[in-house]
Image 1 (tube, helix red, strand yellow):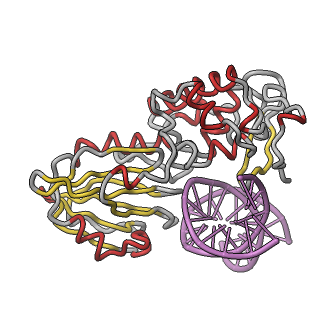
Image 2 (cartoon, helix red, strand yellow):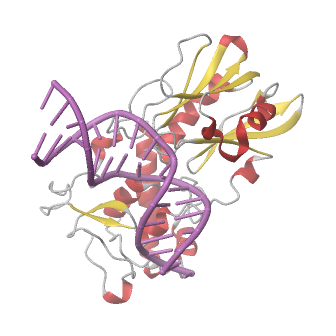
Length: 289
DNA sequence: ATTACGCCCTGTACGC
DNA sequence: TGCGTACAGGGCGTAA
């Protein structure tokens, strides 16, 4: 599912084709994609504006707008499970899953398509406003061991659940959390606040490495849903060590990858590489099934 | 404060 | 073949 590496891939592929383009109109094909904003306000905010350089914070895409020389807010997009963007010529046949069309100058349109309709587009007065409820970006260079220790310090929730909490740290989803925890040799049920400085340093380094690596391979595709704006699948799934590998052999030892449910999420780990925490370092949350 | 659960959705995988 | 059902999951609202 689109997490930070997939969203970063989308951002980098959209930035160039969109920068400097004027918005001529908006067509809403599924109104709930606009959520509380509503199609009318969304169109009002966009039409006549010029798009700046696409930004990203966590899993949120940000498209700054300008009118004349003045900043005119942003529109933002969250892909959730199956949201996608592509740019195509105007007048092309509307796809079954097209939800919102943003008509650009030069006879092209930015298409937001989304099979499961969970994705959301919206507007905000500024990038800062749009991301105010989010924690720091997980790929930001400033996320070192000390910064991570500050974010996790004192928290009694399970490490995995804490890393999935976008208000703590923005960008990681189910895949990259499980992949990072395996590489850092940390059990998902560790109490977040129980990590030693050394463990935080390792985890921060691993998160950066995994994200960097996944971005370099355009993210992960393991079903028909995630495709880049250029229409290609990502490649990082071939480097998965735990995600979806239930019953298969660990890539780091002879043990077998396990699966359980933690906080309503499928969770994969290696019981040898990621040993169960001592009672004093265990969160109160439990695996299910 | 923390955790659970339902909701939003639809394609896919499975059982019979 | 073809139907019915469970399941996947990010974020949010609400309940316990």
